[in-house]
Image (cartoon, rainbow, N blue to C red; front, side, top):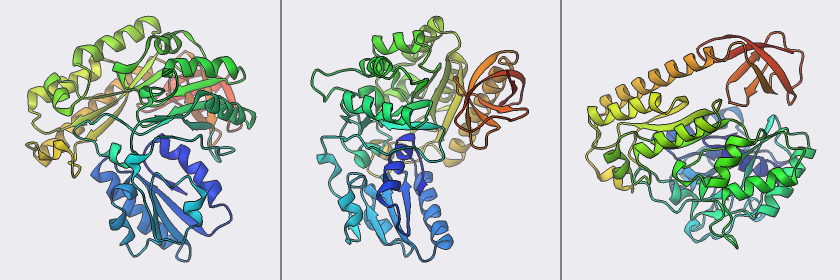
Length: 406
């Protein structure tokens, strides 16, 4: 099982693993968020074929959904299965070389019940899929379909089972997580879902949220993120840019001032919260002044987990038809954003020295992540993967923390 891209893919890959158990099958669960991601998918396919020449090789995921014919034409590929079909047993039992339907017609997301997450200390739980927004740079809505939510009762049952299976941390995942619930009876919010999980699964030690649209953080979610110890002090926010005109051209729904104000309010209520964010370098029409606004956003919103993406035009998107920034300028701006994010992270990590962090250990057992998602390495390492341990932080590098168990 080769899973590329987002945490939602990781969650779905575990269900696929159960569907192909016992078969000589390699599955590549692809990503299409950027042109580089599609290229990485093709590289993974060729590498997998060289490693397993006799196995059936199946490609699924967003890249396969968007370009099924292109992947079916690769000599290494035996079958292509779409995003709408990849969690259905019938698709894996079919002999058809291409099983890809019209994902825009999907209206429901079923709870996908992998029994456990083999090799993962934390478990990823899909609660939402698809997206109804149309950011001008993004092709993912056409790979994932319309926004649809898993009913809260099914989510709670799923999480309770994973806790019983030994997972101490759950990560709620989705394509547009903060749109959760609008399609369900009563239109529950993501905050209401989180509250229900915490109430009905008291044995759950840690709950983490994947990427959020900051403008859609409802009041109940804000109160739980800032006031509930079991909700991890770490939010990843989909900012994308720090200039208002670029945000408008991206068709984002927040302003720069709103992004800054959201983080200020979060940190005022929970000072230890760590902020991650997606930022795009070189969006069409971006000039140096506009880029400077995005660069400054790293400091203005205290981004310590920066995900930097050089803009790449996705076929069929409005942004691909806008005046493009030169490739060399995009690369240079992306590097400057990465350097700024790395400096901010290094300073933040240094400030953690002397603190005590609760660390969920992963494989190998000498490292894991704190609640704020800082990577921590233990000296020495007497614990087992999956253990939740108290660690005193004794030193920091530019990328991770060092500590000893208490």
